[in-house]
Image 1 (cartoon, rainbow, N blue to C red):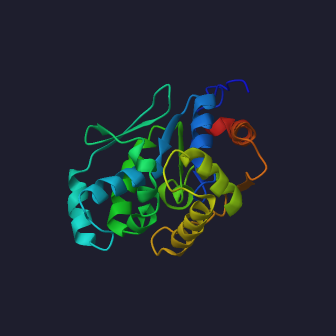
Image 2 (cartoon, one colour):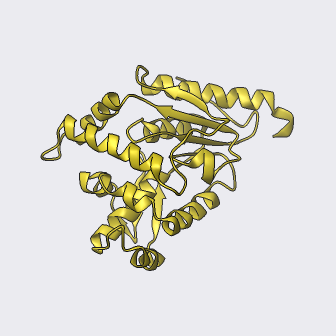
Amino acid sequence: MARTSSSQYGKINIAIDGPAGAGKSTIARMVASLLSYVYVDTGAMYRAATWYLQNLGIQPEEVDKVLHSIQNLGIELIPGEDGQQVIVNGQDVTAEIRSLTVSSQVSRYAQIEGLRAWLVSLQRQMALRKGVVMDGRDIGTTVLPDAEVKVFMTATVEERARRRFNEMQEQQGITMEKIAHDIAERDRLDQEREVSPLRQAEDAILLDTTQLTPREVASRIVSLTEAYGRENRNDL
Protein backbone atom coordinates (compact mmCIF):
# COMPACT_ATOMS: atom_id res chain seq x y z
CA MET A 1 0.00 0.00 0.00
CA ALA A 2 1.49 3.31 -1.04
CA ARG A 3 2.18 6.05 1.46
CA THR A 4 -0.56 8.68 1.48
CA SER A 5 0.07 12.38 1.95
CA SER A 6 -2.44 14.15 4.17
CA SER A 7 -1.16 17.63 3.38
CA GLN A 8 -3.56 18.02 0.47
CA TYR A 9 -6.52 18.36 2.82
CA GLY A 10 -4.91 19.24 6.15
CA LYS A 11 -4.31 17.03 9.16
CA ILE A 12 -7.04 15.76 11.46
CA ASN A 13 -7.24 13.50 14.50
CA ILE A 14 -8.16 9.81 14.25
CA ALA A 15 -9.63 7.90 17.20
CA ILE A 16 -9.49 4.09 17.18
CA ASP A 17 -11.32 2.26 19.96
CA GLY A 18 -12.06 -1.36 20.66
CA PRO A 19 -11.60 -4.27 23.07
CA ALA A 20 -8.36 -5.99 24.05
CA GLY A 21 -6.61 -7.86 21.25
CA ALA A 22 -8.54 -6.27 18.39
CA GLY A 23 -5.28 -5.09 16.83
CA LYS A 24 -5.75 -1.41 17.59
CA SER A 25 -2.11 -0.61 18.30
CA THR A 26 -0.81 -2.40 15.20
CA ILE A 27 -3.36 -0.70 12.96
CA ALA A 28 -2.99 2.74 14.54
CA ARG A 29 0.78 2.54 14.05
CA MET A 30 0.34 1.57 10.38
CA VAL A 31 -2.19 4.33 9.73
CA ALA A 32 0.03 6.93 11.38
CA SER A 33 2.97 5.83 9.24
CA LEU A 34 0.95 5.92 6.02
CA LEU A 35 -0.40 9.39 6.74
CA SER A 36 2.79 10.75 8.35
CA TYR A 37 0.81 11.31 11.54
CA VAL A 38 1.88 10.91 15.18
CA TYR A 39 0.85 7.66 16.87
CA VAL A 40 -0.21 7.82 20.54
CA ASP A 41 -0.59 4.39 22.18
CA THR A 42 -2.85 5.14 25.15
CA GLY A 43 -3.02 1.46 26.07
CA ALA A 44 0.74 1.49 26.56
CA MET A 45 0.32 4.47 28.87
CA TYR A 46 -2.13 2.54 31.07
CA ARG A 47 0.16 -0.48 30.98
CA ALA A 48 3.12 1.71 31.95
CA ALA A 49 1.20 3.08 34.92
CA THR A 50 0.17 -0.46 35.91
CA TRP A 51 3.76 -1.72 35.69
CA TYR A 52 4.97 1.23 37.75
CA LEU A 53 2.37 0.74 40.48
CA GLN A 54 2.87 -3.02 40.60
CA ASN A 55 6.58 -2.53 41.10
CA LEU A 56 5.81 -0.24 44.02
CA GLY A 57 3.59 -2.95 45.48
CA ILE A 58 0.49 -0.76 45.25
CA GLN A 59 -2.77 -2.60 44.61
CA PRO A 60 -5.69 -1.19 42.54
CA GLU A 61 -7.89 -0.90 45.62
CA GLU A 62 -5.33 1.39 47.31
CA VAL A 63 -6.66 4.42 45.47
CA ASP A 64 -5.07 7.08 47.68
CA LYS A 65 -1.64 5.49 47.25
CA VAL A 66 -2.18 5.21 43.49
CA LEU A 67 -3.07 8.88 43.14
CA HIS A 68 -0.16 9.95 45.33
CA SER A 69 2.37 7.78 43.50
CA ILE A 70 1.49 8.84 39.96
CA GLN A 71 2.64 12.35 40.79
CA ASN A 72 6.17 10.91 40.49
CA LEU A 73 5.42 8.98 37.29
CA GLY A 74 6.90 10.11 34.00
CA ILE A 75 5.80 8.40 30.77
CA GLU A 76 7.40 8.97 27.37
CA LEU A 77 6.38 7.42 24.05
CA ILE A 78 9.30 7.47 21.64
CA PRO A 79 8.81 6.38 18.00
CA GLY A 80 11.56 4.29 16.43
CA GLU A 81 12.31 2.04 13.47
CA ASP A 82 11.43 -1.07 15.49
CA GLY A 83 8.24 0.39 16.93
CA GLN A 84 7.40 2.65 19.81
CA GLN A 85 9.51 2.67 22.96
CA VAL A 86 7.75 3.17 26.28
CA ILE A 87 9.88 4.90 28.87
CA VAL A 88 8.94 5.13 32.55
CA ASN A 89 11.07 7.52 34.59
CA GLY A 90 13.96 7.02 32.20
CA GLN A 91 13.68 3.21 32.01
CA ASP A 92 12.70 1.37 28.82
CA VAL A 93 9.78 -0.89 29.80
CA THR A 94 8.48 -1.64 26.29
CA ALA A 95 8.72 -5.41 26.78
CA GLU A 96 7.79 -5.50 30.47
CA ILE A 97 4.41 -3.81 30.03
CA ARG A 98 3.27 -6.60 27.68
CA SER A 99 3.67 -9.30 30.33
CA LEU A 100 0.73 -11.40 31.49
CA THR A 101 1.11 -9.90 34.96
CA VAL A 102 0.43 -6.43 33.62
CA SER A 103 -2.19 -7.55 31.09
CA SER A 104 -4.26 -9.32 33.74
CA GLN A 105 -4.40 -6.26 36.04
CA VAL A 106 -4.37 -3.18 33.81
CA SER A 107 -8.17 -2.95 33.62
CA ARG A 108 -8.41 -2.86 37.42
CA TYR A 109 -6.05 0.10 37.63
CA ALA A 110 -7.77 1.74 34.65
CA GLN A 111 -11.01 1.91 36.62
CA ILE A 112 -9.49 4.45 39.01
CA GLU A 113 -11.04 7.78 38.07
CA GLY A 114 -8.12 9.94 39.20
CA LEU A 115 -5.61 7.86 37.26
CA ARG A 116 -7.73 8.03 34.11
CA ALA A 117 -8.17 11.79 34.46
CA TRP A 118 -4.41 12.25 34.81
CA LEU A 119 -3.65 10.18 31.70
CA VAL A 120 -6.49 11.70 29.65
CA SER A 121 -5.05 15.15 30.30
CA LEU A 122 -1.68 14.02 28.92
CA GLN A 123 -3.36 12.44 25.89
CA ARG A 124 -5.36 15.54 25.04
CA GLN A 125 -2.24 17.67 25.16
CA MET A 126 -0.62 15.33 22.64
CA ALA A 127 -3.52 15.84 20.21
CA LEU A 128 -3.71 19.63 20.28
CA ARG A 129 -1.62 20.09 17.14
CA LYS A 130 -3.74 17.64 15.10
CA GLY A 131 -2.31 14.90 12.93
CA VAL A 132 -2.63 12.30 15.70
CA VAL A 133 -3.77 8.67 15.57
CA MET A 134 -4.79 7.59 19.05
CA ASP A 135 -6.07 4.18 20.09
CA GLY A 136 -7.64 2.92 23.30
CA ARG A 137 -11.03 2.16 24.78
CA ASP A 138 -12.55 5.60 25.32
CA ILE A 139 -10.78 7.79 22.76
CA GLY A 140 -13.81 8.63 20.62
CA THR A 141 -16.15 8.95 23.59
CA THR A 142 -14.03 10.67 26.25
CA VAL A 143 -10.46 11.57 25.31
CA LEU A 144 -11.03 13.01 21.81
CA PRO A 145 -14.80 13.30 21.37
CA ASP A 146 -14.20 15.85 18.60
CA ALA A 147 -11.89 13.59 16.56
CA GLU A 148 -12.77 13.95 12.90
CA VAL A 149 -12.54 10.20 12.15
CA LYS A 150 -13.62 7.58 14.68
CA VAL A 151 -13.35 3.82 14.25
CA PHE A 152 -14.48 1.08 16.63
CA MET A 153 -12.46 -2.06 15.88
CA THR A 154 -13.53 -5.46 17.11
CA ALA A 155 -13.04 -9.18 16.48
CA THR A 156 -14.24 -12.42 18.02
CA VAL A 157 -12.76 -13.42 21.38
CA GLU A 158 -11.24 -16.49 19.71
CA GLU A 159 -9.49 -14.44 17.05
CA ARG A 160 -8.24 -11.90 19.57
CA ALA A 161 -6.88 -14.70 21.77
CA ARG A 162 -5.09 -16.25 18.79
CA ARG A 163 -3.42 -12.94 17.95
CA ARG A 164 -2.33 -12.34 21.53
CA PHE A 165 -1.07 -15.93 21.83
CA ASN A 166 1.14 -15.42 18.78
CA GLU A 167 2.61 -12.32 20.44
CA MET A 168 3.26 -14.04 23.77
CA GLN A 169 4.41 -17.55 22.82
CA GLU A 170 7.83 -17.06 24.39
CA GLN A 171 6.32 -16.52 27.84
CA GLN A 172 6.12 -19.57 30.08
CA GLY A 173 2.75 -21.05 31.00
CA ILE A 174 0.79 -19.25 28.28
CA THR A 175 -2.14 -21.10 26.70
CA MET A 176 -4.85 -20.06 24.27
CA GLU A 177 -7.49 -20.96 26.85
CA LYS A 178 -5.91 -18.76 29.51
CA ILE A 179 -5.58 -15.81 27.14
CA ALA A 180 -9.17 -16.18 25.90
CA HIS A 181 -10.41 -16.23 29.49
CA ASP A 182 -8.38 -13.13 30.38
CA ILE A 183 -9.61 -11.26 27.28
CA ALA A 184 -13.25 -12.08 28.01
CA GLU A 185 -12.80 -10.95 31.61
CA ARG A 186 -11.10 -7.77 30.51
CA ASP A 187 -13.97 -7.07 28.11
CA ARG A 188 -16.37 -7.40 31.03
CA LEU A 189 -14.36 -5.07 33.27
CA ASP A 190 -13.91 -2.49 30.50
CA GLN A 191 -17.60 -2.49 29.58
CA GLU A 192 -18.89 -2.39 33.17
CA ARG A 193 -16.57 0.18 34.72
CA GLU A 194 -18.26 3.36 35.91
CA VAL A 195 -15.66 5.74 34.47
CA SER A 196 -15.43 5.93 30.66
CA PRO A 197 -16.63 2.39 29.89
CA LEU A 198 -15.76 0.69 26.63
CA ARG A 199 -18.46 1.50 24.08
CA GLN A 200 -18.75 2.56 20.48
CA ALA A 201 -19.19 6.29 19.94
CA GLU A 202 -22.40 7.13 18.13
CA ASP A 203 -20.49 8.62 15.20
CA ALA A 204 -17.83 5.87 15.01
CA ILE A 205 -17.53 3.40 12.14
CA LEU A 206 -17.75 -0.24 13.28
CA LEU A 207 -14.99 -2.35 11.75
CA ASP A 208 -14.89 -6.11 12.43
CA THR A 209 -11.32 -7.24 11.78
CA THR A 210 -11.81 -10.98 12.36
CA GLN A 211 -11.39 -11.86 8.68
CA LEU A 212 -9.19 -8.92 7.67
CA THR A 213 -5.43 -8.54 7.47
CA PRO A 214 -3.78 -5.57 9.21
CA ARG A 215 -3.01 -4.07 5.81
CA GLU A 216 -6.68 -4.28 4.78
CA VAL A 217 -7.83 -2.65 8.02
CA ALA A 218 -5.27 0.16 7.76
CA SER A 219 -6.26 0.77 4.14
CA ARG A 220 -9.92 1.18 5.12
CA ILE A 221 -9.08 3.72 7.82
CA VAL A 222 -6.82 5.68 5.48
CA SER A 223 -9.68 5.72 2.96
CA LEU A 224 -12.05 7.07 5.62
CA THR A 225 -9.53 9.80 6.43
CA GLU A 226 -9.13 10.76 2.79
CA ALA A 227 -12.90 10.80 2.30
CA TYR A 228 -13.30 13.12 5.28
CA GLY A 229 -10.67 15.43 3.83
CA ARG A 230 -12.38 15.61 0.44
CA GLU A 231 -15.78 16.31 2.00
CA ASN A 232 -14.49 18.97 4.38
CA ARG A 233 -11.58 20.51 2.46
CA ASN A 234 -12.96 24.04 2.85
CA ASP A 235 -12.95 23.69 6.65
CA LEU A 236 -9.38 22.39 6.93
